[in-house]
Length: 113
Image 1: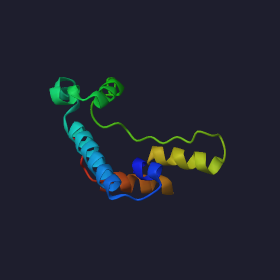
Image 2: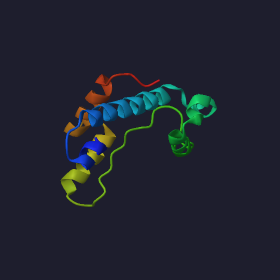
Image 3: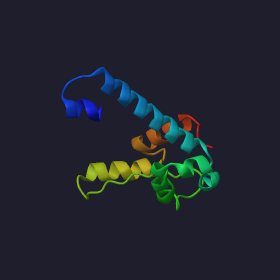
Image 4: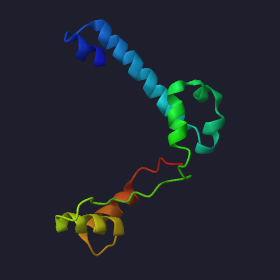
C-alpha cells in the first residue's frame, strides 16, 4: 500500500507486493501470538526474526493470563462520560452501563487460554 501511495499510480506489482508482505507479517504475528507466553523466549524461529526482538522486549513484563479490561476517561469533564466509565468498570446490576458490561462479559467468545 505504501508503494501505491508513493507511486501515485495503481500498478499490479504494487498490489501483489503489498499483499505478499502483509500476508507474511500477518502469518508471523499470529503464529507468535499462538505460542504460550512462557515458551516465546525459547522459541528459536521467532528469535531469528529481527522484527520480533522488539516484541520480546515489549512483552517481557506482561503478566500471565487475561488482563482485566478497565476503562478510564482521561479528562475530568464531562461528568456524564466520567460516570459512565465508572459504572462500566463496576459492572453492577443497578446501572444500565453495568448491566450492558455484565451481559457482554457473559456472552463474549471464550477464546483466551
